Image 1 (cartoon, rainbow, N blue to C red):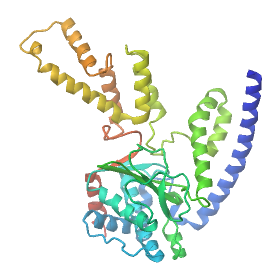
Image 2 (image 1 turned 180 degrees about the horizontal axis):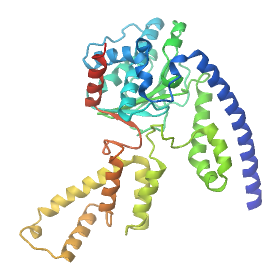
Image 3 (image 1 turned 90 degrees about the horizontal axis):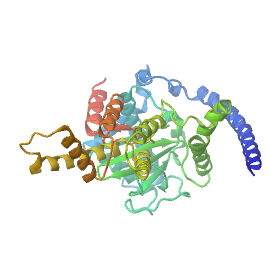
Image 4 (image 1 turned 90 degrees about the vertical axis):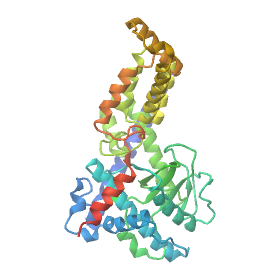
Length: 400
């Protein structure tokens, strides 16, 4: 039986390699053609000098900064005419708005990122979400904007609610295809960064939303085949490549050319990086927590990232304050043994017996050297607060 499984795995792997090589060739050929016709993206794998090039007036984020400023100041005029041509005009403003958000995110981390999620925090920033939702509901009047079911396929050529694995399931997520039906020549001048073709957007809570540019949406003809391929790549990256990296590194390298790396240092995905998970696992495994508690804790970190850790530490701090107010801690000189007993009682009362508080605190200090807002963060997404956007727009709009 084991031999049969090995043979089956080998056959699947060989087919995958052949498919990968053919796809890599097609992708390289397509990229070469794209570079000939799309000069404004030649600097896309470089740093922020792309935004400071000689043709600044051609950069869509310049107009996007003005649109974004109008949105946040409540002077942006919503599209009240859902005609196809008006929808094209409105979509063009959304593309430029995304460019300004992407510019702000890139400046914050110091480089352009080919893939990743931008998380926007603050009630003021939710005005941006409302403008995107306004377009979505005009493009697809069947949507309510509040309780729309997540779909895995759509026949609407512009926008629809859609399924996604990003963040929680408490709010609907929406997809916008970048298509210009009545102004087709606009397509060349209204591209997303990295020539991506789709925007995924959704609320995380009543104070936060995310937006992410993707290659494909879920349209039955134009998007779903590519989207399905992308999901397949993700599954291979997460479940196959770790095994191949250990037992067949050369094959792993070949397949990575097709799927990309799960944790590309230049990507800014919201998934928790493997090295974070490994470091946290090592800390938890060395603790005196029960085996079932260790498994649960590691799973929660994989799902919720650093915001889960800050929640746990806050829970402990709250319990500590309650204990400190207890009469037995007032006006007493305690022995080291008594202090240890109190600390154990503290963790027990917080529902986290034997939780390695000091080690987790040190872990967060290390992460905070390279990533901000750990209490709001899941993985490596770029976080933009109200103040971040205010600073960005003030700087951009002051340029001549």
